[in-house]
Length: 357
Image (cartoon, rainbow, N blue to C red; front, side):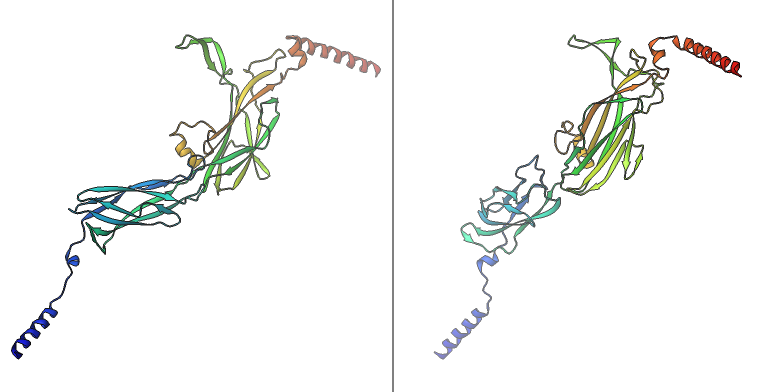
C-alpha cells in the first residue's frame, strides 16, 4: 500500500513540473492588415471651406478563416479624429471605416501634423482575445496656407485730366489677410488708349463689322506717363515695388505720383486750338506671391476672391499746349507777320529815342 501511495505522489510531482500553456497563448497572432489613405489637407480659407475638415478612408483586410472584432483608436496633436470605436471583419473579408479630422478653425496657422491610427483584435470568432501587437498606420495632416489681402485706396479712384506737366497722387494700403507670412507686389503703368483704325476694317465670324485697334501715335513720340514713388521723405522714379514679407494682419502703404512730363508730343492728335491730346489707360496692379502660384491655374477673374490679384484701371486725359502761342494757333501763318510787325515798332521807338538826344 505504501508503495502505491509513493508512486502516486511521484506522478503528481512530475505532472506539476510540466509547464501548463494555455490554448490561447499557443495560437499565432491573427493575420490581418490595416491601410489608410494618403495625406490629408485642411483648407482653412474662410472663402472656400466651411467648416474646415477632411476625411480619410481606412481598410482592414482579414486573411483568417474566422471573423475578427477590433477596437479603433487614434492620436493627433492640436486636432482630433472622428471615427467608429470598433469594427467586425468577416472571415477572409475586408471592411472600411472613415476618419474625419475635427477641430480645425478658419485662419489657423499652417502646420504639419501626424495622425496615428491603431487597431487591436478583441475577439477571434466568438472567443475573447488580448492583442499584444496592435496594427498602426501613420498619415500626414496638413493645415494649408492660403493667400488673402486687401488693397484699400486712400482717394476716390476716378478718371483724371492733366494739362502739360501737371500730376496727381494715388495712395493705397495693402494688408495681409492670409494665415501666414506672404510677399506682395504693387506695380503701375500707363499706355496710350487704343483707338479704332478706320483704314483697317475687319469682319467677325458672325458678320459684324469692326476695325483694328491701334495706338494713335508713332514710335518717335513719347507715350508713357512718369511715375514717382514716395520712399520715406524722398521720391524715386519707379513703377514696380516688391513689398517685404508681411505677417498676417500687417499693412504696408504705397504712394505714386503720376505725371505727364512728356518731352515730345509732336505726333499726337491735335484739337482745334493746336494742342496735342492723348488719352492714356493707367493701371495699378497688386498681388500676393503665394496667391499668384495658384491663380494662373484657375479661372478666377481679377479681384474675384480675396487671394486674386487686383487690377485698378483709370483713364488719364493728357493735353500738351501748343508752344507757338495762341495767335499762331488761331491764325496759321500769322507768326511771320507778327514778327515783322514787332520789328517795325521796335525801329520806330528806337528812332524816336535817338531824335531826343
